[in-house]
Length: 234
Image (cartoon, rainbow, N blue to C red):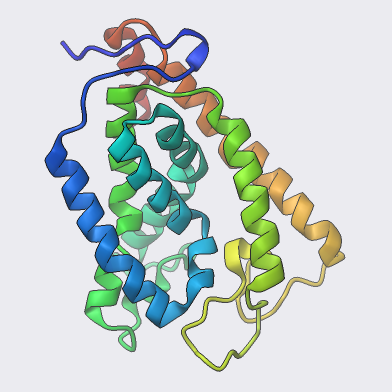
């Protein structure tokens, strides 16, 4: 039987240890990815929610932190699910959300595209980590603050949709702060209103539902009860 530590009120607590080999593998991957991404895409690439979550996850691995792991999970589990669905659709020859079209761009080296596969395995790693350390209910509040900062930073320092930076690899439209089309900024609403509305939509449609599911799955006192809704969900 899988044991899960009950964390009163969904707060942090000590769970089962994380194997050292997992920490080493993920840290080695990050040690390769960060300098390569920084060189190719620039520092603003780490303002993406998913890239920032990868950094949080690695830090959470080493200190076995339920809070850091939970923050990353509540922020990216649902968006990365759509990334996986879109990748499957692209492999099947269908154009769905176009989230993974860059994975099939022959102008991008295979190795670089291979690094981007972390979008696919990171959600599963986070679920596994939560099963060991538990879910911290403070994650939603913490991620909301971090995400708001990343949105503002992306809007202030990132390249807008439709931009043509000197480095063609520089990311544009970070976290979709200019709409859903990287080639053209949205025009249906004033931009100063769009960013907070986009934040609110993400909070209601992605982060709050994820928080509620994780809170139910990973903070129950008995593992048999905690995993049952997760089995149905997965």
